[in-house]
Image (tube, rainbow, N blue to C red; front, side, top):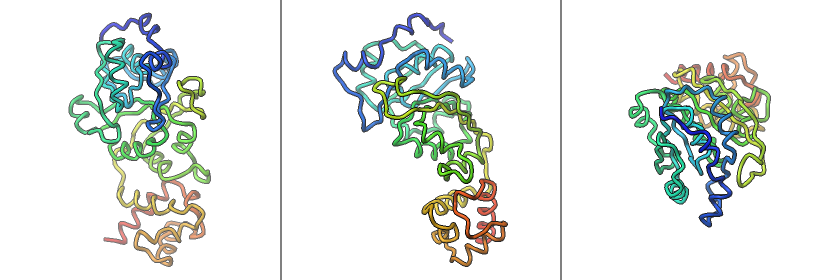
Length: 286
């Protein structure tokens, strides 16, 4: 790993300085709120527990603060950024360490399988994720979890609450269930709006997601079940299962077969019961 110069990195231009220098503005359409403090970035990297010999994928490089902190710690950083203007700034300023490679790309469209083959190890992902794509990206990463070691992401606090929500909570939903069944979710630290530039209106949470269960029985059925069950949260779950090809009576019988009352709502059913329902649905169809 190249020897990182921490003193030099401590003097990298701030996002505010860089945006002003090049006469551009953060793009709300891309959810751009840049991490502004290299010391906060170092703490995030340290809390993640990433090892020095690793190659890390950064999703959304922004203006390079987290990138530099990662480069101090790990062997190689491959960073993806959709905004060509930001890539041009980073290339002109030339403060990123030599073990960093920046590639233009949309993180919702990356070929994670190809990255896995390139690195020849399960992926380690970092990123400051904008609100508008957090859930969509996580659904995709859960699908790709066989080739992922762990992810350390900054989420808006509301999104982070959903990821580890318990049954009965208003934040409990399909992603809560899937992650409970497949991963360990750890909240590493809270970040105030002042940690970013421009400052968002909400607080953020740094979350580490370590995938443990690489395969679930009847996973496609489970995902379809979850989407149907939570489609109308105020209704009783038996009324929500019609898209699965069940009449209301069939839905009630399915629920009763797993010891569940048809009068329950989706948020009242624990993850392991959803898995049992998916297995029962698959058995019924075969």
